[in-house]
Amino acid sequence: MTTERENYLKILRGEQPEWVPNYFDACAWGGPIIYQNIKIPGSGNPDKKIIDNMGFEYNDRERYTDWLGIEWTQTVDGAIPTPGKFTMTDITKWREQILYPFPDLDKIDYKTQADNYYAAVGHERAVAALAYGPFMDLIDSMGIEEGLCAMLEEPEAVHDFFKEITDYEEKKLRLMYPYFKPDVYMIVEDVSSAKDMFFSPELYDEIVAPYHRQLTKAALELGCFVEMHCCGKCDMLIDRWIDMGMTIWNPAQVMNDLDGIKTKYGNKFILNGCWDNTYGKGGVTGAPEKDVRESVRESIDKFALGGGFIFWDCGLTGGDVQKYEWTADEARKYGKTFYKKK
Amino acid sequence: MSKINEVTAAVEAGKSKLVAGLVQEASNEGASANEILQAMIGAMNVVGSKFSSGEIFVPEMLVAAKAMQKGVEVLKPLLAGAGSVSLGKCIIGTVEGDLHDIGKNLVSMMIGSVGFDMIDLGVDVSKEKFIDAIKENPDVKLVACSALLTTTMPSLKETVTAIKTSGLKGFKIIVGGAPVTEIFAKEIGADGYAGDAGTAAMKAKEIVQISAAI
Image (tube, rainbow over all chains, first blue to last red; front, side, top):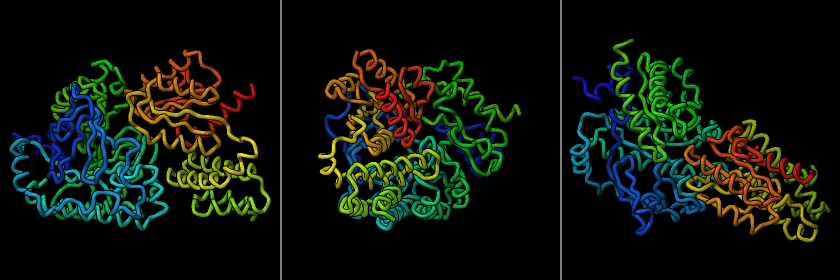
């Protein structure tokens, strides 16, 4: 019997899958823990607990600091850098203003971590290892306004920071790969808002793309498929990502020309997402179960033909757990038999 | 090129390291503080329009706003004696339940750059806090409320409703944020809506000036 992972890998290879996968049924996020985030005692609401995508428990609005010294606040929709509390004020002094040197990658026991991970997660699902992109580290460290100004005003210092971060991520990938053997290497880099990129495609080519290319090349050499995580309107970058060797993109959100991408690339560039979690009839706040389920079927009908598609509701629950139980349930039911009916 | 034109060009190009010196030179050559300020505001209007039309992106807009701030710092002592040229106070914040501040900060920077004095209440701002801030600043001309999440749009509605029914008057309310539409803004009783930071600055000027003319 075909497992979720085997079916998922068929899609990644550009083959016809047996069913339409519901993202988190088919793929788990994983990878080594290099640094244990330090929770700030007494922060957040202890009566309201949140489990993040990696399975860690937090209080709602609980604050913690990460490996760069950035303070984060956990919410039901994910963690965000605590507004107004940034560690870096001057990119030319980044080594002095964030936690540096970075944690020693050579001291991590990757084998034990991988053994523990697979003992908990199993091997039924594919595994995607996540790497935060250098742009995210920049804006999380100094805020988006200052980070974007730095890209124009101090490009050499930004390159210096990005290179160090990227070399570190590449080393982490190469050290962990023999033990975790992720199927997918996902670069997490939100360079867009709902309406447009935060900066021009030309600036992307000049300052960010070289580092995406470096990480993609390393992951491909090791045998991973490479996925880009980029929220918002970013379809103008897809040709660039394909040129680098990436084959998957999430969360393919509806403000992009998803029809055009599907038509242009077919099952050679995989769309992970394609459900309107903002304005769609199932995505709007308070949508009834009937509309939520119908919207899932419509999304699958529209994008799953010929393969190259993974259904994902794109998260952002706003605490509406029930809605996301409906999307998952409908995607399983409808997706399971979709290709048999066609 | 006259010095005042050089100031305009430097603001538009986001040359923050040059603007302060150019403003000083323009002043030394006899340009009044108000003339220089208006030239910089004009430059920011151009920047805002270019951003709204997609000709430039956020970083170019940010460095222009930063350059203007440098120029305003030089002008401040001169403006103090020349009478206020401010468009008035603008209270801005992200509504309760929402911690996102990127859009709000961009809008604050752009509205500030066209001549408003900004009072930034930050994120997760309750309706009561908005109302208290308005009471503390009875001369406020504009209140700008932001929401990024679909789940905090009801909070935006509650905030606008609470302000509108508070009995406080003399200002306009504009709203914005990724999921907010013009239709929604009208439904909840806001006086204006802006889809991006450049438009917000123009809309802010427009509704305050219309309001003043009535």
